[in-house]
Length: 126
Image (cartoon, rainbow, N blue to C red; front, side, top):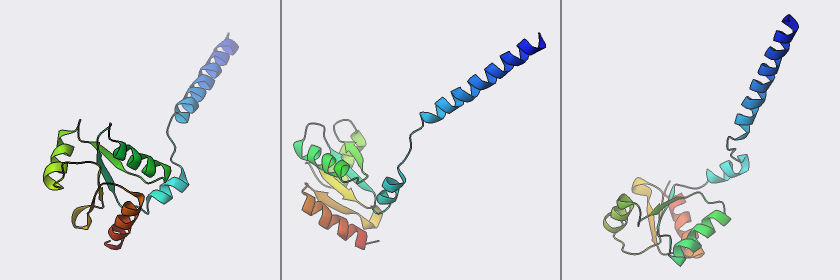
């Protein structure tokens, strides 16, 4: 009888450990290489809309080049629309804001060359 109870306890313990291990496997992992690469960029915020081909091109460029960015869709985010039209004085998208505060560089429109030049400017302002 005691042996059966011990076996049951061992099974419960084993199941608990395997469940904990399973829970841990669902946690997202950040690639150390990508995390290190992301540190070389200032904050980048993209003001966009879902249907805009230039916005899509910008997002694809950032993703393809592992450039971390925050996407703010101005059609679904009223605060983003207000920032776009009032703070950045733009009625069009994409608008890219590189850096924060006094070190912001605002880019209206997108080409890889324009972005890279603006990024260098923002990085030199640090």
